[in-house]
Figure 1 (cartoon, rainbow, N blue to C red):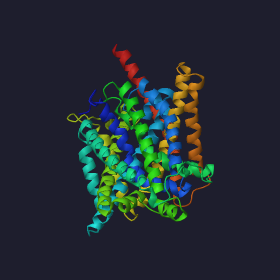
Figure 2: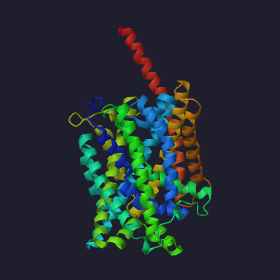
Figure 3: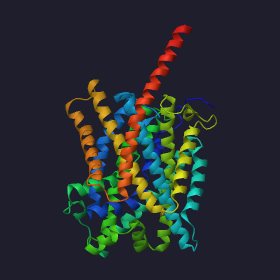
Figure 4: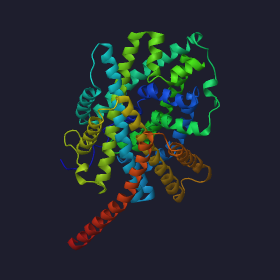
Amino acid sequence: MTGNSLKKDSLNIFQTIALSVAIMGPSASIAITAGMIGSHVGSSVPLVFLISLMIVGCVAVSIVKLNQTFPSAGSVYYFAEKTLGKRAGFISGWLIVLAYLMLSVSCIMVSCTYLQILLSILGVTIHWLFIGLLLMGLIFALVHKNAATSTWVMLLIEIVSMGLILLVAGIILGNTQQTVGLSMVPFALGGNTLSSFGYASVFGFLAFAGFEGASALGEESKNPQVTIPLAITSGIIITGIFYTLVSYAQVIGFGLTPAGMAAFTSNESPLSDLIARYLGTEFAIVMLLCMAISFFTSTLGCVNAGARVLFTMSRDGMLCPSLARVDKKNNTPHVGLNVFVAAITMMIVVSFRLAAIELAGYAALTGTLALLLSYIFTSIGAMVYFYKNRSWRGVQLILPAVAVVALVFIIFANVYPIPVFPQNLFTYGVMIWLGIGIILSRNQTESRTAVQVISKNESNLNG
């Protein structure tokens, strides 16, 4: 089928929430980002999550308002186009596609890492590439199912995983006599600089990355002006509380001593280590499986959202028209889905010499920076559009403005001073990608305008 519309009113509020939550992958994200943040700010990890939650909330103000005004499968691409024009829309879409693509790679690589660990426990040694290819085969099969099926699977897995992790956090906090007891130290600055908080906040944003994913279901959700904003808002609040509580439990679980913090920040999966310490190896194995599945569903969510952005950009004449094709049976943008799956598979194949967790870190940094740039376009666009239309005035502009300033600072903190090799390659790679998008945006918008003029002239002649 070469049609260019997705199935209307096919997803309810819970399925819409599921996509945003699945992309963020709370149970998976907290397992690795807490240690990454701790390596920069020590015990102040919960404070970074709170700061990240507040900044994400400021960004969400614009995205929620735009979803109420322009529900679409194009997400931030469509928002930027409607508020700042075609060129800004293309650039924002160009960035969000990179973000979803690289976050997909990151998530699938972490899933491979956990499954590789599980297999080694069982005495099976296998290169992560074979696990990755198998998982991508499953991704290919699932994304071509209708969106309702995929979202129910994602929601169920996340509910189970988050429930088990909350149980672990409760047990840790109930046995604080093993460390130093409850303390407010993790919510203090702890002698950290503004720069260290700025760098650590990237990993805080990584945990929230994709919170706007429900926006990509704007054409498939029931009553999208209500369900999409509700899905985004509830997803942020639920995961924000979850991250703060579980990260606090991790810091307390390791103990606020120099030795405890050293063990916490040097551990690739501190949560798994705590689970084994407090509940035993058997439960840790179960949690490793849950986290591997959670990262798998995050990949599934990123691919679904990214393909829908490609679909909308192509339908608008910004990209190859074939990307706007919809499968007749399942009402999915199957060409865009195939492109995403093929690109992810290619990247993991050519990177087989790296450790899976190493590739995951590089891809996560790249995807998060691209995502932050797209959020800046969205926040600025919302401020300009709603100010012109007299929807926002005075104090209503404060939160979007705070979002823009905070996002610019976080990006600057990761660009200057120049990051160490090889992180600098990926950081500046995003800047190069942005530059290419700026150049292409001019050509694409000019071509689109020419096609529209020709179509209009043909219509006048036929008339």
